[in-house]
Image (cartoon, rainbow, N blue to C red; front, side, top):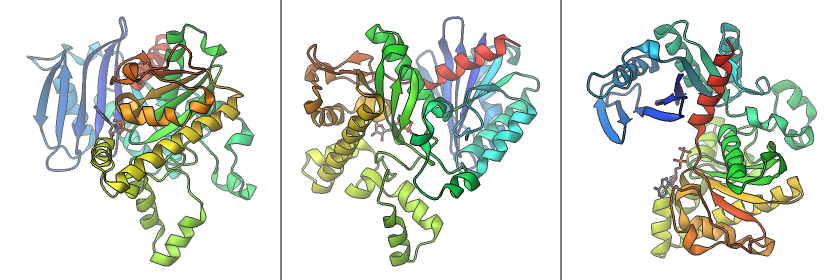
Length: 398
Ligand code: ADP
């Protein structure tokens, strides 16, 4: 079975075609700047990269060009579209409606459309993607995989916010958590790597990318996570604030005469390490500036590592212990010094890392020393594979 995995952002379409016989990626790519004059797709096959500049005004047009690449006469990986057996879609927000992946029907599309009130930026592009696929490949089975689904096991007393209960009833205002597909993959993979059943492990997954969240995974289930009602909550991120004293929001709005949209922009796009350093949202730039002695870059880096470590300790409380800490995503997989600094804050817990083993990027490797009380691993995430596996499992039963 060949599964096409689709991940639509507001101006992007990421895709992978995976052969599920051996879970091999046949081709993958990213269409960027959809809706702008300079849109282009970067298509990768067997280590070769093809950049095709082709302006497109919608996800549907991007989808058509992407399908042409998959069938290209020189570097195509399929002869015709019948070779694609199913499509798996990543959906950022499943609200409290979806606790697992589902086959996409008209009813499911209508339900996902209802979620846009809670995810106005993230869910509409994915609905566009589903509709485009439906038009271009009618009848092709499609599966929706939700970033929030893995967190449905978080108990009520941990997802409820201490504000008047009527707002939970009125607006479904509660912790949802995100990056669930990544947390699920990494926690299951780390169990394989340490050679223990996932049902016997207390793992903290640190998904540190542009957006970042931690998840406490107890016996294979999410029991707490750092993102909340929205993906701004939790640890500070590249440009998102993470947790704040809530009164800072109203204080700033009054003092600076800000509208709700303006304060949203500040908290989502101008905060985090970018906000503190004033340099960049990219940790590569922060590291360089900090190493050159830029004081605010040093401050941003210290604050980030302190707050991530503090969350890790917090999740020790959520699980009554910690067996494994796993780092993943852009920063978690690649930023050697950030991992080191986070772990230094956890020495009191008996965390010890081997600096030589830690000196690597993007590899599956244990970086803790044999006498460390908690194992520390780097596990590159693979959300696309989880989406493809769920899609296969659901479509096989049809
Ligand atoms: P997203 O949340 O958009 O998927 P990523 O997981 O790709 O983001 O993380 C992006 C961040 O990861 C960048 O800001 C950068 O700091 C870091 N990063 C990504 N690749 C590398 C690399 N090769 N070396 C060092 N840092 C990297």
